[in-house]
Structure formats: C-alpha cells, structure tokens
Length: 101
Image (tube, rainbow, N blue to C red; front, side, top):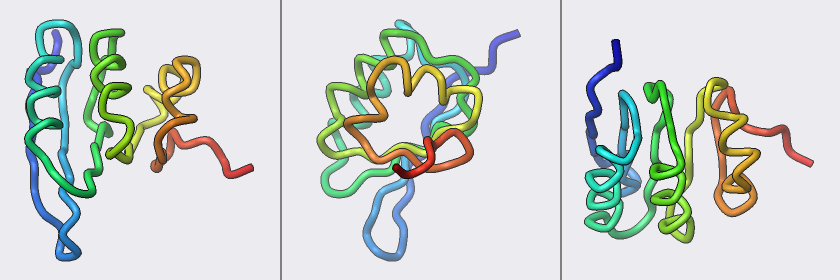
C-alpha cells in the first residue's frame, strides 16, 4: 500500500529551509512539491529519505528547481537521481550520494 505524500518544511538555525518529503512523488503529488519549492526563498535542502517512489513528474519538478536546491537522497532513489542526470546539477547528500570524484 502506498504511503501518503506529505511535506514538512522547517528552518535550521543557519536560516536554511529543510523540506522533508515522504511518501510517493508522482504526477498527483508533484504539483504540491512544485508549489512548496516555489514558495521557499533562499537555501533549500530537500530531504527525500522518506520518499518511497519518485517518477518522472517528480524528477521534472526537481530539475525545474535545481538552481536552488540540495538533495538528501536514500539509497533507494540514488539510481533515479544518477540516471536522470539530476545529480550532476545539484548537491546530493545521504547514503544515496555518489562518492566525490
């Protein structure tokens, strides 16, 4: 059974906004993710560690906002980030991050 999509933004002491995302990011939830990314100014870390599924609609939203986001990616999503090329445009942290070259 799919996990319900949710967003939880919070500010770090240094002013960075962390947007914790959980559930599935697909064509039904991608507009909500896009709105949250558009409504956040300044440095933004998108924490995808609780995301269980990410389809092309979600990847497209992340590409649209690649200029101001940093991703925290679980191992499950690492291949999607790598194959899509998104990892070449944004900083990726977490267990799914590629090792530095």
